[in-house]
Image 1 (cartoon, rainbow, N blue to C red):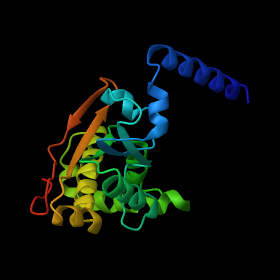
Image 2: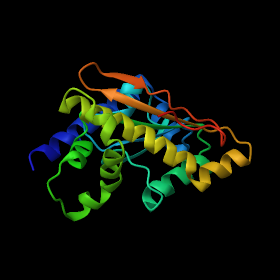
Image 3: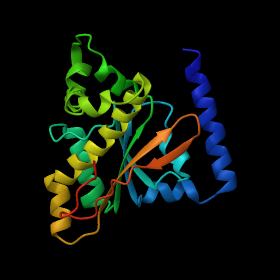
Image 4: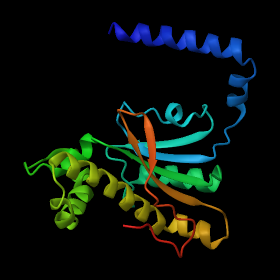
Amino acid sequence: MRYLPEIFANNRRWAEAVRRERPGYLPGLNVSQNPRFLWIGCSDSRVPANEICGLQPGEMFKHRNVANLVRENDPNCQAVIQYAVHTLKVRHIVVCGHYHCGGVRAAMDDTPQDGPLAGWLAPVRDLRQHEGSSLAGLDSEEQRWNRLCELNVIEQVRSLAALPLVRQTWDEGRPLSLHGWMYEFHTGLLHDLDTSISGPQATAPS
């Protein structure tokens, strides 16, 4: 419980600093938001999306889950995408994974799993099996782990491109681009996986 007062104290200091340095900023957020990006990222606490992109509150709409998955049967993710694309009119959706992802590592474990996490990570386990031969050609378990993190992001961009609401946006001639990125903890840098898709005729590279 001792951490809760600290969080509120931190919040007060932050709010006071913002009001002092940018007097009209917080009242402006109260009126509306106009983000240019939707970020679909991992729940990992070490990936602060706005900070690493140099963006302020209001500039990036976000959805996060374990292993940054895009699943058509996930109403939470689908509702976020619908609101971002149809209401907020974002022009870019970024799927951002990170190296050494614990969710991807759990999907690589052959130990039988149960509970909600096991079902949630099933697509990553399927991807691991599908890419088994290419992963086996890598020199170390860490390389296989990080490559599967990349392949997972590429797969999620493909899943995004196949969603009816995304394809409807393209059919209506509205601009929308999908991107796959990776974040690297030890450098703090983002890496573009060259997976961008900007229309129904494009496909993410393998």
